Image (cartoon, rainbow, N blue to C red; front, side):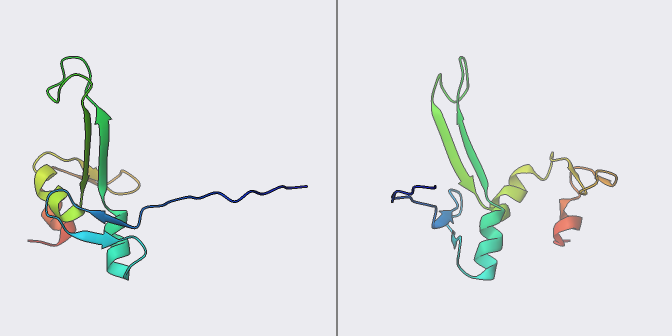
Length: 98
């Protein structure tokens, strides 16, 4: 026998980029759903001697459009099977922004 009880739960409704301020609804339009899936969620606590401060909690939610220019000069990217390596600076080729 399985016994159930009612519980209140919550789930994210939307993500807002901390850099540009754009909001994407998780269950919204197709474009919003795709953008929400690509968000980078940063969540950590600085350790002893951290430049963020000892034991300071750091959080940020960044959309892919803001993330790309932040990391494109040094990011290492590869295809799903890791055979075709893409060197830093080639993100424009992938994103078609050349």
